[in-house]
Length: 372
Image (cartoon, rainbow, N blue to C red):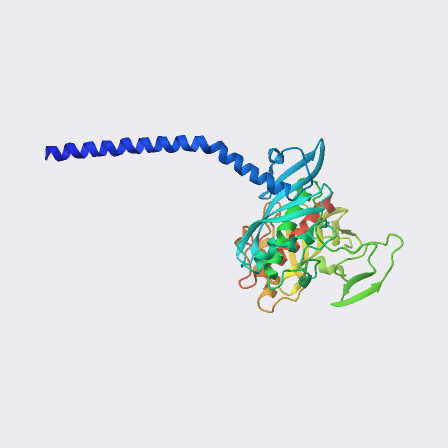
């Protein structure tokens, strides 16, 4: 019995010594290769940045900053900034999350994009790695509608991979909006197809009918609603706090969004903004958002849509809309919870819920400018 106990102690001691030796070896290997692994990782990241930006002579990795969960790198040639690279992502792929690297020139124009990681269906969504993504090169998201043509945008979708194409656009748009807000300091910038002086047709909505007015504008025209024309100021009673002016006359347009200002005794009580998204299940979704003066959401309403009755149409109901009341988008993330946000989506109507959030986010950026 004494021999067995002695043998057991020796074995335990031997195993302990062997374990300590192995741990020491692993520790030495880790520290011996740590710098090599780090350098290899940095070099790989640098190559990705080089693939989406013009030639630079600094090390963009030294400038890495994170905004809105996205990583931005600043590239320079001499003392001049030649562009920004953004590691962005989307949760809206057919098989979930995938990531891109997007290169922007200093004015916000897209230089190039590449796919980093994706799990899309081989032969369909995976074709994002082909020359398909070259259609974004040189495009200015302020003028180029980053939605697929099927949804009213400018992007040619991959055949039989519309969801993957939409997601790719979403990742680029997310990067662009964050760039404008956090780096170029243009928080009001939104990717919309706003009417311009070069447009030959201006569309106004009235009584649910489309009125088309042919116009060749030779001089600046008075501000007019770009999205939806209201005929009665009472529409704003539920959108913003009490007012004694006529918001229909206290109107401005910011990047294609209609902003109506409510005042009481000359003091601003709120901003009612007509916004839209082309990302609905049935296409374009138009909403009215009321912001309090402090930026919190007072109320929302669904103005026009083509969503499925009983499903997507529920985004216009109180169960969905009430969750936004009193929330400030600076703190409340306007994305559905399944994609990392704070919004409870309507069951069975994910696309409609996303579109509502997209329109809300655009309205918030417009509010930031209107308040200046």
